[in-house]
Each structure stands twice: as structure tokens, then as C-alpha cells.
Image (tube, rainbow, N blue to C red; front, side):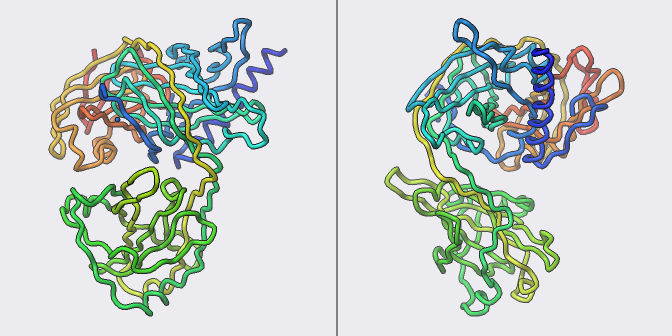
Length: 460
């Protein structure tokens, strides 16, 4: 009876975690009939806000320590799916600092990618636990892979233990190290934040804003947005002067509006980060129409300037959001709102575990000669974890890898006629290889072929 109840709990937990991860990634749950729906070149990462970190809807449950004080892998990873469980290798190595324990539970890798599952738990009896459901790993390090990101996939309020998943890719090594040096806690999200700002009146009362010219290769720290490709190739970007105004956002710590105006017929809103938490709190502004629908989001945004504090100098103190709004009259019928995440605390420490991890050797390979946007795809490798493709010019950063892969339409075709499309979960290595992490284990013996840009790729 006990085993039956545990099994029921695991199934329910998997469904709950899967639904939550997909919801936060703005993805649709897979349908049943689809089957699945800084050196030695280490990589230091900061929080990556990408859907690639969210597409693997894998839950991990807390297990019971056995007589030797070790955690049974089946108890911890028992409901991530039978096929995936068969691949994951138990690690069970821990590191403690300041009363917080980090345990590498298990991991799996192939030649080009790895998944590493890590538990974080506050072992003190303090009233305010530093590990909670808002855990957001910030500074981290994975040696053995050249690109990585991390996301919390589960939290158990009864044990106070959070599970996070690291994704790494590149030229993987058997000897791997996972290190966390800071994490954020106490996230407060405001999805329809109202700054109570009459932007049309503000723009009417001020003189026309001049502009400054920034060099993309020297001054811009980062860029993003749905229409980014319209300006990403430009070497010069026009922006507002810094600190043309100073408008606080009540309730949002470390972020204020530092300038607004029109540049080249588009509305620019400049945001400044400052104070102790300014580097970590984040968000964006958008407009709604009279009915409350999200009518205008920024076409693109870019960061620039330096953020200086007692800990050093950081890039990206300013962010400028560019909207396709050309005059004040257009703005009068819209309302300015925002989405912001405000954290209570940055916890710093040193948690590090080193372990051996042999590669999953099973794979299928295929060759193709496909030229696309200055890149040439030459080789495809399929493992139970996903697909890696290699070629010439793949290391180019002129276009986002996920944009290219989406347009090339990577599909896995199974012998029974069913298929799975690679729509999310792409991570790119510094050597130019690109990996798609499959949402579930790929049964190699059931794959017929892979297609890319409509071209059939036979595997062997």
C-alpha cells in the first residue's frame, strides 16, 4: 500500500511539475500521440532568461536516505520517466557552506551535452529559510562543457529542498565540476505593474530629445526583442542621452526611468539600474489598449553603460526599449504598464562538487550539405538526449541560433509515422556546434530519419 501511494504521488507530482514548467515557458503541453512532445575553458554563467532552460519538463522527487546516509537514486529520480531514469547516473556528492548544502544527485551526458540535477537545502533552523520556492541560481560554473544554463524544476515545502537542473553543451569532458557562488531569493513578481505615469503629458512638456550614437561592437552590451534583426546588423545605434529625467517606480527597488523621447520616429524609454539590487531586479515596460489588451511591446531593446559599485564595474546599467510609436497622439490612447521581478536578497557563498561522468555512447549519425544564411550544416548526431549539428560558420553570432533553427524546421521522424518538431531547447557552444535538448528520451531504435529544411537525412 505504501509503495502504491508513493507511486501515485510521483505521477501526480510529475504532472504538476511538468504543467508548471511549461506554463512558465509559455509552451503547450505535449500531446500523448506525439510521444514526446570563465582557465581550461570553463564557463561561468549568469541567469539566462531563455525558453531553452524551460522546455525539459522533468520533475525530481526527494528520496529517503538509506542506512549508509546516501540518497537512493530511484527514490530521488524515480518519476522523471522510465527511459530517462535508465540514462541518469547517480552522483550523490555534496558541498556545504554557511549551513546550506548543495548535492549533485545525478547526471547524464553524451558527446555534446549534459544534464546535471542538483539539490539545494538550508540545514539551519532559522525562521527565514534561504532556500525556498523562489530560488534563482545567479552565479554558477560548469567545467566540462562550454555553454550552460540552470533552472529550478521543483521545490518541496515539507523538506525545504529545491531541485535545479544544469544544461551544458560543447566538447564535454569526463571530469566535471559544478559550482554555485550566488543565488537570489524572495522574488516578487508584478505582471501588470502600473507606474501611474502620464507619458503623453511628460513628452508634451519636455523639449524634443536629442540623441547620441552608440557603436554596436563597442558600446552595446546586449540586445533583444521580436524585431531585433531590423537593427542588429547596424554598426551604429541611436539612443537617448543618459539621465535626461529621473522617475522612480514605486515598489520596484533599484530601477527607474532615466529618459524618454522620440528618436528616428520611434519612442524610446530608457531605464536605469542602481543600488544594491539594481543588477538583479529586472523587467520591462509595455502598453495596453483601452480594453486592457497588450497592444504594444518593444520592437527591440539594448543595454549599455557601466554599473559601478563597491564590488566592481558591470555592463548594462542602462536599458533602452524602442517602440513602434511615432507621435504623442498614438500614446494618448494607450496605458503604460510593466512586468517586474523584485528580489529580497542575493545570497553569496561557495558550493562546489567535482565528479566523473562517462558519456552515453549510443548515437546515430547523418551527413548533409545544407547552406543557410552564411552557415553550412555538415553533420548531424542523434543521441537519446537530443540532436547536435555541426558545420562551417555555425559559431557566428550575427543571428541568433534559435532563429535559424526555427526556420530550418528540424524534425525527428519515427518508423511508425509519428514525428516530433524541434521548436525550443536549442543551446549553442562556443565551437559553433548547436544542440537541441529533446523534451524526453529519444528511442534510437524507433527513429527512421531526421529532416532539416525539408531535406531527408538518413541515420546510421
